[in-house]
Length: 218
Image (cartoon, rainbow, N blue to C red):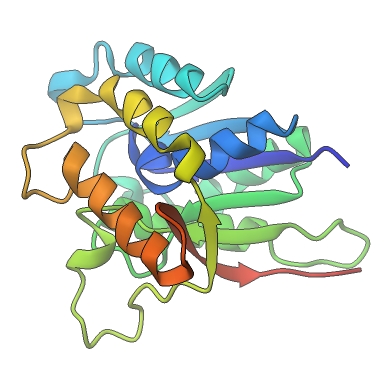
């Protein structure tokens, strides 16, 4: 059965850094994937980042990108119930079976707030279709939290992206303004190295890792 999948990310590029390979595979299987970006990128890129984002998502077959256009690094200033209602409205429109979003332990505050709003929006209620909630890791945020923090990213779900690794890198090239030089983790080599490490963990050349928050089988 074909599914509708939402990827809800704080900033343009987060959605592909964390899950481009997996999203590409979902699209290739005939599923509908929609990207939702909750906050703007850096001010110096604000005038063209949406165009770049649409091109980046199109590279892996995602045709629809929605921008909520909240100010960068100010999501914590929005009352959570208002932010959550924005997410709930989109969930009601698209009726997804899966949502990918940020990990709750990311260092970036916009990532944390986005996760909290999504978690609240998908709370399991009677007579509502359960939604699988999956968190991805975002280089230069997930790994920069303290190693002793109980909110450290703990992957329990892996997707083999060996066949689409090149497409992931090509999609990120549209976000060149956000990428950095190696050894910065948000570099092309950094992204590929992480995928290699995650792949070795499960016996494949390249993989993306996720932490499943909730999955309900009814």
